[in-house]
Image 1 (cartoon, rainbow, N blue to C red):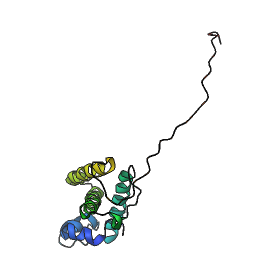
Image 2 (cartoon, rainbow, N blue to C red; image 1 turned 120 degrees about the vertical axis):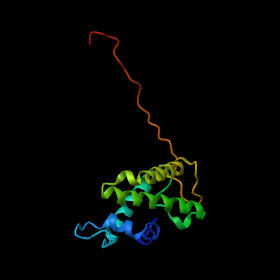
Image 3 (cartoon, helix red, strand yellow; image 1 turned 180 degrees about the vertical axis):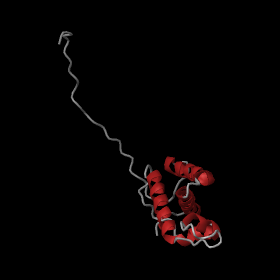
Image 4 (cartoon, rainbow, N blue to C red; image 1 turned 180 degrees about the horizontal axis):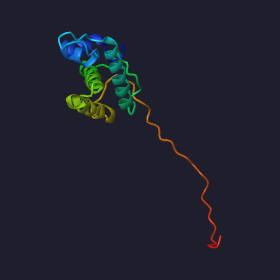
Length: 146
């Protein structure tokens, strides 16, 4: 586990909704839908990769949640991963606008974390090294006919 488990998604999202978002069998009625854990795992993998891509601007990823010294900060990362997972599940069945607010909330949170507006105490920050290049002075001919 990195940020989120299938069981955490199942706890946060009602089972009838998860069934509709993960069961692709058209012969199942709305009450017969079965939750497909593999599809949830795929959504979690995508969400964790997205979280890492956003936080890599400031932190060494993947984050070690155990090293973060704040329950609230850990919860922010987990919640962002959860919201992005749910968004991904909705996008899978082409209902992206239903969960658009989830993505926007997660994006704002991740942006604040990456910019330093919100800190992750204990998370290893990426080194901020400025790279400078030195090149020889440019030399141009004074002759305009060349």
